[in-house]
Length: 85
Image (cartoon, rainbow, N blue to C red; front, side, top):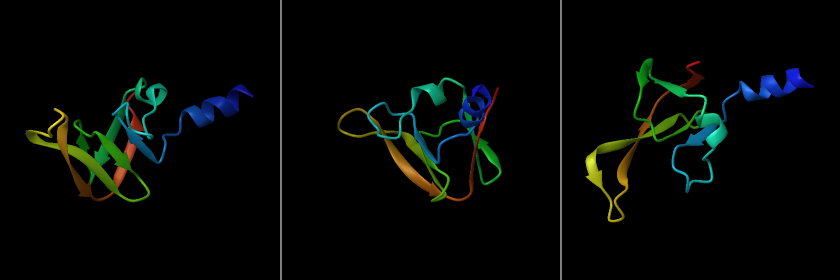
């Protein structure tokens, strides 16, 4: 049974967000240091990604919304999440 748990623990979800208010937030997965390759280049500022739909959300410079959260833009292309450890 332990092998099945490790196999499922090594798979990343299809969609993941770093925002705790999001339904796609998963603290256990984020603790393992997730890396994102987008169009072949490593991105370090990704706030949310979706592999099946092929997009990432990144902050748009220093712009903030009225609640103080960063404004995010959606970029489309191939997304490859991986664990850095």
